[in-house]
Length: 90
Image 1 (spheres, helix red, strand yellow):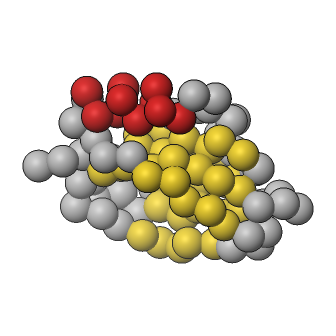
Image 2: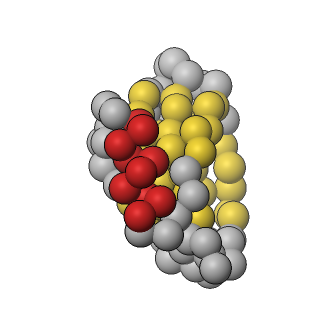
């Protein structure tokens, strides 16, 4: 996956882009942000719950988490997970 290409594409759409790294078993529960968030798994296996809907996005799958949506991200794999995230700039 070309993360620089993703970063440029997100930037063109008004989003920041960073890389998050989680060990196996890490969970970020019930977060709410004031801005839209993009998320894209790039390594490992994560499970995502957004407003009660749970699924496992595939590597390279872009997910939009709307502003104000309660969401949880979990590393459900046996290895480190890495995912891109970005917030819509005001």
